[in-house]
Length: 393
Ligand code: FES
Ligand SMILES: [Fe+2]
Image (cartoon, rainbow, N blue to C red; front, side):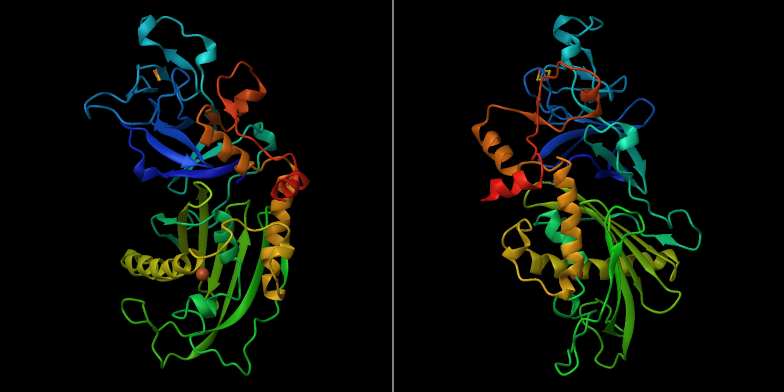
């Protein structure tokens, strides 16, 4: 898992003005809430007083959770602004200036595409990898399904690799891949792996033979009479945990599917799925399209729940790769670049220190570049790829 990228936190529709949401990303908890202006903010969930969970449980639903745009700690009522500053400490009297050191990390937050995103890292603004762009958003020729949230029980790297894998359709998705492989002629066709349009990952496109789109009404099976057709499909990865899949069932018709993933921890990922389409634009098609996507996602979930090890192994020689895996290899080359920037969390060390139960960690925020005296320790990171390889031996 990597710091220094934008990650989806919650769907806009799930973040009310009255109540913060506690969200676990990169193995740590964050408090996401709306300030006085209704602007979404993200801060570390760990109170610097005695470790209370800022977005944690309260006794009564009537107790205010957000006062004057500040989140109120449920333990002793300390109040924190969206900038992470502690504004009030009830025990010394409201209006008495709290010590500066009481601050918590605050993360740049934007709301776009129906999702609240936070930049989880300490890079200054001009050095940050940009937020993924949903290019078709707002274009009247395209329609967006409401954001679908999928919780999957595996590591995001395995999830992304599954999405850039042109050889799994026929086996995992018999309802939309090739349900009857011809052993005499079948093989994955040639395809190139190049740099992605948004320049933060790899991209490949390929044409594969699929049954026609004549599914039964539950999308569980495909009609035996549907004529086979060629489908143009491809995927671009964006950063470590997002990808954009294009599916063109026929010329001029396209789905553009954005899978923007939230790495929860080592074994869980929450996928925010934005599905754009330039055909069947009527809202009445949203439901059936959702239903179909859910069936397909469930097929991936069932297969991927059994992979071992949970993360992608390093080095690559711990698996046997074929030409159809070259997009996967290309994605791993990008991961190595981010390893070398020192952005990867040293998960084993993080887990060991957490198990000791004496240290609370935070993802470093941009504020740490400009001020000192922070209470929480920052999460352990690998210095580079070599350090990561050495640590896995
Ligand atoms: S632990 Fe948060 S106010 Fe005491
Ligand atoms: Fe799949």
